[in-house]
Amino acid sequence: MVKPSDTRWLSHEKCIRAIRKELPAIITTLYQLYENSGDAEAYGLALIFSSFSGVATVILLSEVLDLLARLNCFMQRRAADFSALQRMIENVTQELKLLKRSGAEWCSEVTSVVENLEKQYEIPVGHLRTRKGSAMAYDSVEEFRANVAVPYLDALLDNIESRFSDDVVKLLVSSSVFNPALLPRDDALLAEYDTTEIESLAQFYGSEAEVIYDGVTHKSPSLVDKEEVIAEWRIFKRVLLQETKIFMEKNKLSKAPSLQEIKVSIESSEAYAGIFPEMFKLLNIILALPVGTANVERSFSHMKQIKTRLRNRINEQNLIHTMRIAIEGPELPHVDFNEVLEIFKSKNRRMIL
Image 1 (cartoon, one colour):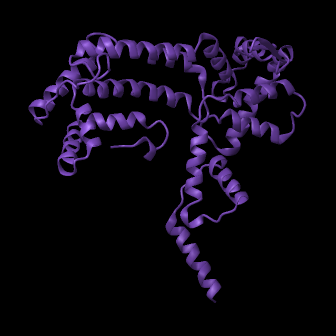
Image 2 (cartoon, helix red, strand yellow):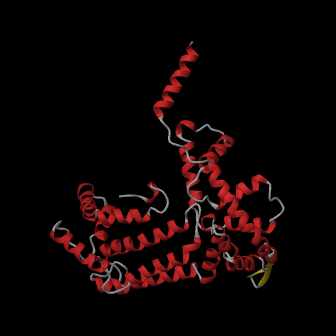
């Protein structure tokens, strides 16, 4: 089996997919473990996986987690583009609603998998004896769908709706106005480019916030000056487009860079220092939106690759610098290792002589 702990983040879908694919082999192995060594845990898992509800749960979870994993991947990219977020959420929720139908594809697959286990592999699929009302207490597709699948999918849809309310989605979609890849190259189109989105961001971050805690109202000041944000945007969007073109030509890129790269490039030149103060405040907010933990997970992966068992004495400062290069550094070009070997050999010869 694939363990989530053995792979990278978002691997639960791969885990349940592996169980679904190798279900007959897993059940057979679990029964053999029990017969050979009396392993009670293996026997309990075998009973769960060989029950009707167990088979149905594996297949349903495989369908659901596949959809959620794709939504997670969309949200947890390093350079998140939220312009298509609304459409992505609608597509995922629509597919989840289709899984609730009586004639959904997973329902017929449960029946075929159960028949295959009994006829081809001679694994009896029965009813798991457990308390009434438990998710494992059903032995027909319609019972499982009505009592487990539909309530579970309804709760999941409610959770997605509460997490991605209209206001949240609108705010995240509006943040895509800064995406260098979406900037129009035509001057006439650039003049009218997404003024509504900037006004939404300016209104949200330019207003005071109120939070009620323990009956006490706490106020926080606005983060930006909304009038200045709208005024600066008229020129800043042109600067953003110009700097994107310069950055692409300088680095010989075929596609637009990320907003983080352009922001660093503009700030490092100091040509616009003090000219767009409110716009840079807004950019810092957009870039710091906590949409996921992907970068954090990647950082741990990089650290494990750098600080290995043979390099466990590397000091903290060198580790920080090396990780920064590994995470933020440019992509390595194609390396001809034969050429590197020849250079290394020639240097060794010179040192010997």
